Image 1 (cartoon, rainbow, N blue to C red):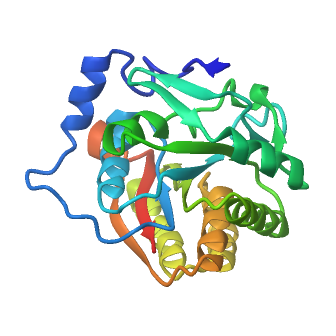
Image 2: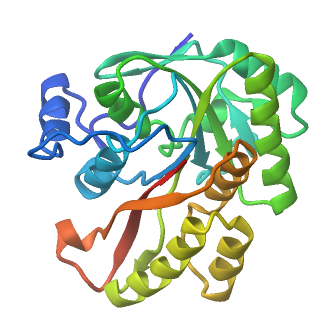
Length: 269
């Protein structure tokens, strides 16, 4: 089974040429040499015209492994709270991106939390939005989609360890991508302040601090669950540092500074 796109034509162009031209517009004038191999990434997942440049410039700043575990925010909460896909691949305007079905089978059988549930993806954009970007930049890869709902951090840790064990058992080198945005629908001033505090914790590779700051400042970010899971897994895999590649808000496009969404692109290595 090949999963059809749900958000082509809304979050990103459904026409091949239009999509290619849009992504090409994000390319820097001079090619960027990747810094190193990424163990983890935080990428935003809004419509491309708002957050696509942040995601694009973050992706081209690192080498990615050929197996990508994409952790998506589970906004819709339909289906299983921690879900993976039973499809063989996902269709986009660039063609079919293949899922590592062996990885999916293994982790869904071994994990206490992750279930195969295609219905969980029907109304969820957080992973789909990353696929055309990855196809354009990396071209050849397999991926594992996993939706993460808000839960106790012990569950995030367990899922992170499930990912690592499955990768080890199957001899996969992985990059873990957390798909999520930061502050939602607050003023530019408030968003910049709150997001700076959240980013500081992420750059310290401190998931516990991130969740504490999120709660203390009441940050309306949807990136908490996948980012914590990505950070915990990356640290287990030997991550030593994180770097902010780009930050902006929706106001850069909309000019509405009274109600913005924050976007950060961060690499972990």
